Every structure is written in structure tokens, then in C-alpha cells.
Image (cartoon, rainbow, N blue to C red; front, top):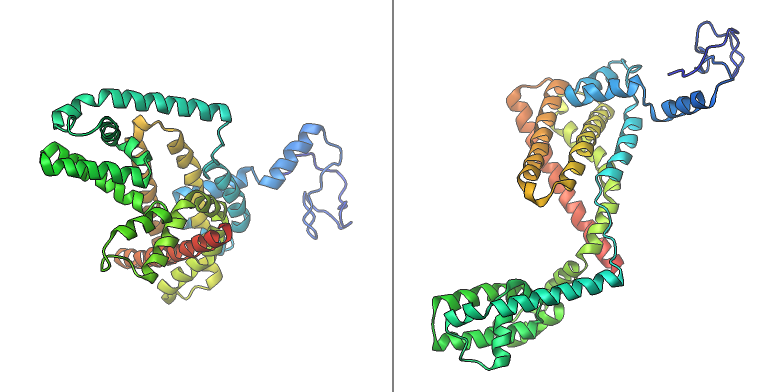
Length: 375
């Protein structure tokens, strides 16, 4: 990784010590000529800072293809060929969160918003105009006023019905149920069942709608104080889901980094009979997380650009990542800890269960902290 021409003089320009070959044995500085052109300076600086030389690929290739080998070699003292685990992890994790993290939604301009509204109105009008025939076939077109028929027409389209307010949905459903008492047709029953499910979801979409629904219930059916408090929190979190998810993704790098020592602790607990020091478990965990980031850097952007028509490929890639994680974790644990296949699988499952439970608990805590800070 010299990137320059070696000096003929044998005195170190940094500390003055005698340089026998190309590197000073006291401070480690290469004995290079000071004069270098622009491209030599740039290439040397990039190679030195990012380690994009043979050393990087000597670490990357076996890290991905031979699970556990890099950690074994590193702990055995064969470190000259490999990049330091922390340095490798920091660089790869930076690339991972730049490439894999979902881009923030770009706010629409006023012009785009007006266009979307106009398009939605045209689409809604087309739906209402085309729904007349199904209404007539259902036998309910003649039983209501023109206003009510218009509301029922809207209700027959799920997306349009979802856009109605709680009271509007309630009015439409009451009219439909009244009609069903007179004319009990299967088609009308199906419509009521479908829209009633949407209406229930609407009840919980806002706290005001939830309270309005509570007023319509009997005394025994109403929620108590604690249930109302839980419902209020759940609804509020749902309304702020975009903000909470954005904050969660923003803090994801810190979460992964802080959970590596915990993951190493779980592994040490399950493989404690190997009498390996905690630091060695931690280095093993860092190498495994780095490998996961590298695979995700390749796969996740590919999944993001796939069109909806290729959703099957997207699902296969998602399953492939999970399968690779299981294979890599099993292989690396088996090679590093030298346990039987059955023992390795059992211990691996325990590590995964402990990690997932702890990760979910921490995520729930983070969600509540973000919710209280954001609202």
C-alpha cells in the first residue's frame, strides 16, 4: 500500500531511526520519496484512508464465503492480511445506512397536489357513474332518495368509502341495513359485511371517532378508563406512525451498534463451555454483522428498484436473505466453536430468540420515547 517510490537514504524522516528496508522498525512509517504527482497523492490518500487495496478484499472475500475463518485467523495472530474488525465495521456500516436506508418522502408541490386532487375527483366521478348497474341488480336503487343513493354508490367502492368521515360511513351503513331488513339479498349482505369491516377500522383511526363509537354502545359494552387510555395511546401512535418510523430508521445504526455487545453476550452464554474470552466473542459478532451489512448493500437496493410486476422476485430475495443469515450464522458458529451440528443448531436458535426478543423490547421502548418526545 505504498503508492510511491522508496527513498535511497536509510534515515526515517519521521523519527530519524535507521530504516533497514522499506518501513521504519520504530514508528512504522514507509520510507517514501516526498515528491509525488497529483494522482499519486490522491490514490495514496484514498488507499490509506479507506483501505481499498488487497487488504480490503483479503478480508471481504473470506468473510462472506468462509464464515468464521477471518475471526479464527485474526485471533490466531494472522492479522497483517486483514483489516481491523472495528475499522471494517465502521466503514461498511456507513455505506450500509447510506445505501439501504429508505429515502425520505419528498413533499409534493402545490401544483402536484392540485393535480392529484383533480385526478382523484375524476376517478371518483367515473366510479359513481359506472356503479349504477350493480345497484339496480342488488334491488336497492329505488328504495332511497337521490342523496342516499349517491351515498350508497360511494359506499360500494372500498377506497371511496374509506375516505368518508366516521359519521358519513355510519349513515351509509344504517341506510344499507334498513334496506336489508326489507330486501334480504345476498349481494346486499356481502356489501354490508365488507363495508362494516372498514367502518370498524375507521372507528379506531382517530380518538374522536373512537369516543363517538363508545357513545353508541350500551353501558356494559363501553370500555373502562384503563381501556380508553390504552386505546388513546394506540390511536395516537398510529396517527404518528410516519414520524415514529422515520425516527426509528434514523436511530437504527446506533441500535445495531449498541446491540452487538449484547449479541456477543448471548453467544458467550450459549457457548460458555468453550472458555473463550468475551472480547473474542465480540470480534466474532462484529465480523458477522459486517458480513450481513455487505450482503444487504447488494440485495436491498435491488429489491427497492424492482417493479410491482416482479413482486415474486422481491419475495424470493427477501426469503433468500433470511436463508443466508441462518446458513451463515450456523456455519460460522460451527467452525468457530467446534460443536456438533445438533448442538450448534440448538444454541443458534437460542441466540436468535434472545436477540429478537431483546431487539423488539428495545424497539417498543424507543417507539414510546419517540412518541412522547414528538407529540
